[in-house]
Length: 269
Ligand code: OOG
Ligand code: NI
Image 1 (spheres, rainbow, N blue to C red):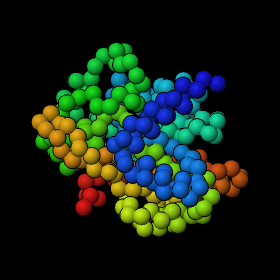
Image 2: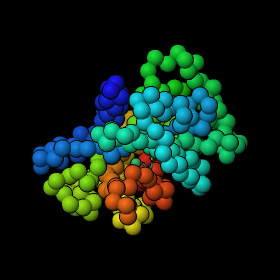
Image 3: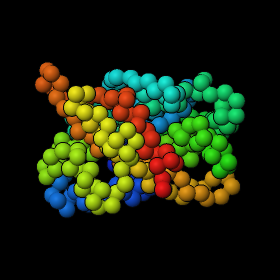
Image 4: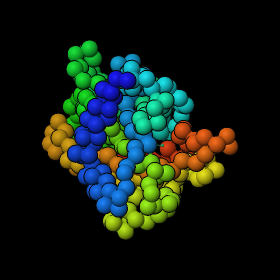
């Protein structure tokens, strides 16, 4: 099997851990206990546009044999998402969401259109879109305007294309039996968790429990200077078996809705 997909995932991890210092710290914390970390999924964000939408971001994954699976709708946040999975269980699932641009008019729509006008000819991108980083320049005032109505749009304006988070598969941990225990360990070690809707989103009844850190703040260079803004976060997922005995492989929209908020400014102190 072609393993360029593993190279791509390594490359995504590399860029992700550079802007999210929590990732390495949490890996060290767990590997010091003898754990081997398994990645449940990687998530990407984008805008719904024929050049850069979910289908475009998914290309290298589809080429590697990933299949599109379930879709998810987030009405209030004006988002649509789909997840992709591979028959090789060693490969992480991929969760890709996109902001529904036709639901944004006025100032917000204009700011986003001005970003999209700066997109290069997509054929000239030498790397997969999901590693391309930010393909536009934005003044900080535009970031702030976006963040008032859509933290997701603001995050995209600041960071562009990269892995938004990786996710530790809690089932594979040998020294930690529950998501509660992992959360306690993380809090004890000084990591701040996203408490929106409770630290644990979901339950065994929906076959998935999730928690996440609050995104690390990173310095981003905007068109008019450097500003500190929320970057990437780390997620933790515990999956439960379906009545047919196989592990649930999907996502839960109600939980995901709160996980998205891990990059919201309101969670920063
Ligand atoms: C994705 C949030 C949802 C999950 O596992 O439910 C999610 C994002 O923040 O881009 O990752
Ligand atoms: Ni996730």
